[in-house]
Image 1 (cartoon, rainbow, N blue to C red):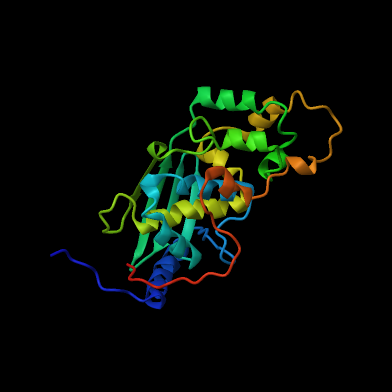
Image 2 (cartoon, rainbow, N blue to C red):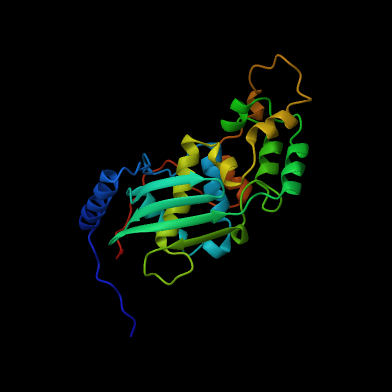
Length: 247
């Protein structure tokens, strides 16, 4: 028979995690928790696109739902993004450490993206706010040759005892990245080790001066992401989380 650790109530887990976090703060660690407001994990173009990209991969389908619950209840208490890497701390029965590595976007792919988006992005502000044509959005989000990583380009490790390839703590961190992109979309370019300024510079060379903002038909709503990817993504509607045995 396998060994299953006893269920630890959420309140107790949070107390344990808070003690560990307090020790980290006392040692001078600057923590950056993931805070989700309401039921929607991500509401901007970049955050929504990141989450949608995760959910279209069958490899992750069975592991992602519990990660959503974890990130919603504030269990991702620290998430740091560096070039090609995410380091996070997740509150479970203990404070677990998660490391996610994202492969750099190949130079050939990046050059092709910049070339194909020529004339479709007017400024860095427009890029980071996700205000550009649907054609550019579709190009950036392509499963092969786009900006978002495929499963083969993502590797991860967690200090928890779960032997599954992707535990719920890793899943929570991956969703946490989407929530963080809502606030700081430039971090996606940091993860893929490319320069967003280069994309704007190359894509905007053929754009005439004087355009203040994109036309309404150029703005893609986040709700359209589900139609594009052929999946259901988080929307702002009442929902109820069910408790289950957690670490």
